[in-house]
Every structure is written in structure tokens, then in C-alpha cells.
Image 1 (tube, rainbow, N blue to C red):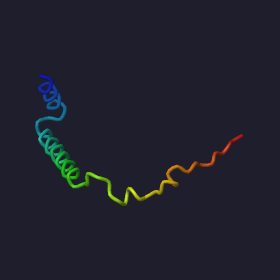
Image 2 (cartoon, helix red, strand yellow):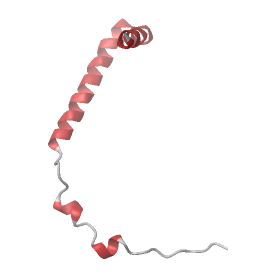
Image 3 (cartoon, rainbow, N blue to C red):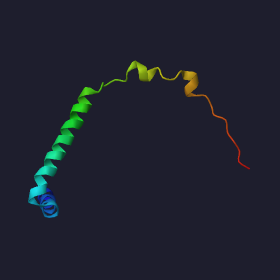
Image 4 (cartoon, one colour):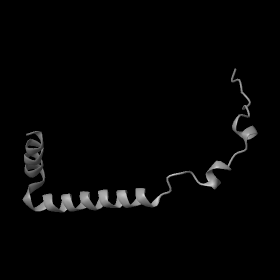
Length: 67
């Protein structure tokens, strides 16, 4: 029921000519997002794990007082 109301409002706002174009664009965007998600590796690469050594990760920064 809610989807019919949303579809009716979208039809009133965008009109019958623009609505198929918007649907096609949305479908292409979702398809592109899914293909990009499938192409990316599920586990982090060795390069991302070796960017910082453990001592660099926990080194404190100097504090500066503004008086």
C-alpha cells in the first residue's frame, strides 16, 4: 500500500515522461554499485596492513597551549 502511494507521488512530481528515465538511471546506479562491490577484495590487502608500524600507530602528539 505504501509503495503505491510513493509511486503515485513520484508520478505526479516527475511526470510520465521523466519517470522511466529516472528508473533506468537508478537501476544503472545500483547495478554499477553491485559490480564494484563484487570486484573489490573481501580482505584487506597487505599494503593496507603494512602502512604503519606499531610504534607509529601509538606515538603521542605534542600538545600546544594557547595562552
